[in-house]
Image (cartoon, rainbow, N blue to C red; front, side, top):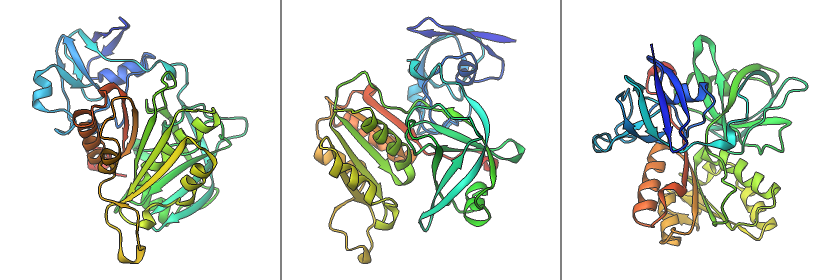
Length: 343
C-alpha cells in the first residue's frame, strides 16, 4: 500500500510506500527535501503537515516538541504517512541533478591533526569523480548495513582526493578502527553525496559561519569553494573548541584571512587550559557571534557542530538577534538513536 505525498508550494507529488518515511520516499522520487541527520536529532527536515495524518516516528524532543506537533509540524526524516498527505516544505533544487553513487575508495593518506582527530584522504577508482556541493557529506558503508556519515572537507573543484575529518568517539566501531587498525591502501565503500547544507549563491548578504569542533570540515569546503568562485560577500568564521589543541588546523583559517580581504577568522575556546596561554575569545562560540552581531537581520548564517550548539544558535540567532529563520542553514553532527548505529 502506498500514499500520495504532495509538496507545497511546488505542487510536486510522489508515492510513499507504507512504512517508508516522507523524506526517504521524496529522495527516492528525485525530490530533494532539506535534511541533516536523518535520524530525528537535528530538526533540519522539519516541515508542516497541511492535510492528512502521519506517524511521527522516533525522534528527539529537542528536534520536535509536543507544541510543534500541535501546530502541525513533523520531522520528515521520521514521519511516515498513514493517509495521503499534503506537506509544506521548501525543496533544494540545486542538488536534484547530482547523482548519488555507491563507490569503493582507497585510503591514500592519514594525518593525525590532533590526539583525537584524524584526517583521511580517500582516492576514488580511476576515471571516477564524485560530484557534490560544498558542505555535503558521504556515508561510509560498514558490514551488516551500518553506515557512518562524514562531511566532505575539500571543495568540489579540488576533488582528486576526498578529505574527511574523523574525531575519535569512545567505543566507536568505525572511529576506533580508524585510530587503531586502519592503514593506507585500505579499501572502503561509501555512498553519496548527501545533504542540503551548501552555500546559497542567490543572495548578496554577508555570511557568518559557525563551526564547532570537526564541524569545521564542511565549513572549510564552503569557504574554499567561495574563494574559488571569487565570492565577494563578506565572510566571518567563528570556530569553537574546548582547548587550543582542538583547533586542529590553526594556520589554515589564518592563511585565508591573510589572503582574502573579505574574510575574517575568530577562534573561540570554551575550556582553555593554563598551558594554552589563551588570550583570545572564550565561552560558547554562538555567544561570541551574538556579542559581535546583536542584529543578524541582514545576514545569512551557516553553522555546523553538535545538536546542542545548533539548537542554541538557531534559537538565539532567530529570537534574540532577529536572524530570519530561513537564513539559518545548519548541519548537526549526530549519532544514530540506536546503539547499533553508534560511530
